[in-house]
Amino acid sequence: MLKNTFCHIPGIGIRMERQLWDLGVHSWDDFDESRRERLPIGPQRIRSMSHHLDQSFAHLQAHDPNFFTNLLPSDQHWRLFQDFRDDIAYLDIETTGMGTPEDYITTIALYDGKTISWYVQGENLEQFEDDIRNYRLIVTYNGKCFDVPFIRNTLRVRMDHAHIDLRYVLASQGYRGGLKGCERQLGIDREDLDGVDGFFAVLLWDEFRRNHNRRALETLLAYNILDVVNLETLMVLSYNMKVAQTPFAQTHRLPVPMPPPGPFMPDRATIEAIQARLHAMSQW
Image 1 (cartoon, rainbow, N blue to C red):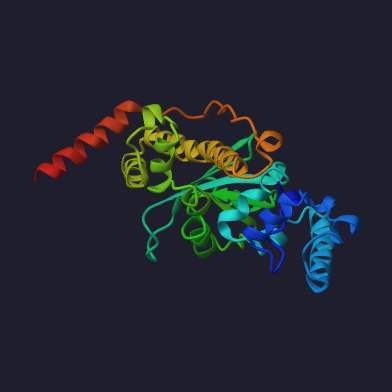
Image 2: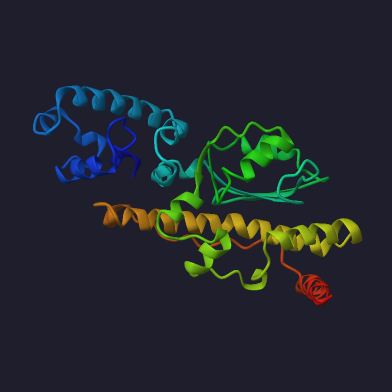
């Protein structure tokens, strides 16, 4: 879809991009000399478009997604997905809270469509910095406001990757209510982890640290990893919904991926014990 994109060019908005498509200029390759002469566009804008498309070809060939994310609005970053899919890491973090000076990252999950990686405070969290360098583009939900700033502030990792934040892409399609809310609206079932949320993840970490309950940590990791696995599904669903609104619905639609088996299983006994404690506290 990226080579069908013109709205990253200064002065070319979504409406004019649609007009170009209607006039048969479906891709950068179509912006040739014979077609330029027939476009109802002034010579100065033609020169500007030619210059920016030359730059676009060069940055795409150099595999540089930042060039495009810096020019496109956040709700249009989905356009990079297919061209940079092999360089994507789906990213999600769990923390002890919302970012006070005392809060810290407990676990991080990464998924690149093939391999799942996880990082745990006090075990291998320092490995994250080396591993994230293997990717040029990250996909998150609300990561621009939360995950990435938290990583920068607490781990001192640069995190200057190009970034597709699905919060903005899904909101532009009418899907809101957080990651779990969007999943429910799109028919994604969390099965044994249904009802576990970010607050519950804090309690799982607390149970692990206080009582050395390894099953609590494995449940937390199962939850964290499910977030990133579901991000790939949400990314493909979002991409297909967006593509359906273009002339390229038939040629660009992607199959929804099958989720991989998770390396950890949630422990129902641990979940139910914490739920029971929360219920008891609510009765006080």
